[in-house]
Length: 369
Image 1 (spheres, rainbow, N blue to C red):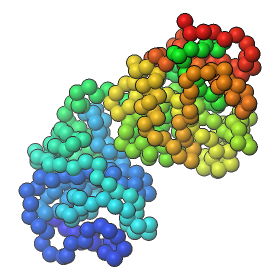
Image 2 (cartoon, rainbow, N blue to C red; image 1 turned 30 degrees about the horizontal axis):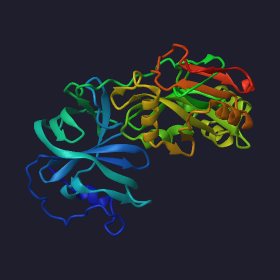
Image 3 (cartoon, rainbow, N blue to C red; image 1 turned 90 degrees about the vertical axis):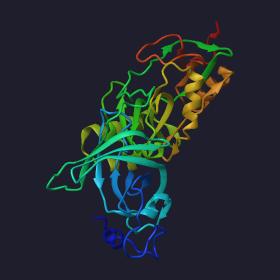
Image 4 (cartoon, one colour; image 1 turned 120 degrees about the vertical axis):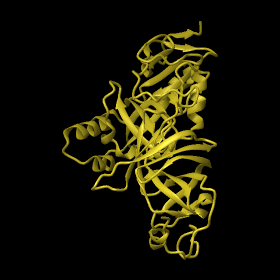
């Protein structure tokens, strides 16, 4: 039976902008409305709400709705919400239940295929989510609120699954190439790393594919900034000393992480790192490997990634000598010259990426062939 008593018990109407209907029988409807709200509370999650007997039956889904049928997602059954919540967006104040920003990620209508205390099967007709989904009650004695959410239909046409890891594309050492077909990035002297973001959670892997997420808690917010977007980023982890990249500081941070003698949080405060993503390998169901460098860079820039411990570093076209000189002036290792038309070739070095040492500033310059 629908029941809003728990919803009312958890909220103070004079302290939160959330809808607070008067007590009484809930309104009647067609039992066909749904909403998915992205909720930046103490931890990012998505709230799936289905209209049923005048209320919104609700589940909190930590990683969002799965886009493919072979992925299962935890869905935590929460209290019923009033039907007015289907259009709610806003900031729930600090100190209140569910404090944080909430906005509508998708909404529309749904069809009920099956509904009982054990299984809820529906077809969603939204702008972002379309297809057949099932919620299955796990009936766990210690966690009776835990359900599992699965997609039953195939993924949307053209959808490609997010890779766990791709061998990073290496650069070849060589003299500086110049010409209209080249772009230049600074060599930061850091540690090569990929970040895989899914459901607002980042997974960090080193160049060999070993997961090192727990070592870098300061990157947690990068996943939250990406939100529901699925992405695979290639870049560098860099530590700084007196405003400049420091290989020694990074070695100290890595040594402390591998020794297990300090908590990751204390290491992050003592020697923080920054993640500098310079390439985009996969984005929201689409492989970017066959796109030219300039297009991958455009998509990466448009993500707007900027935070206290991550940012997209600049890249430059034209006048490679000036970029190399700036690298030397700032104590950096040099530049990577990248052919603007180049595809990303996992694990394969070729002449499309050239690593140029800052010490070769007055050395040979190779014109574009």
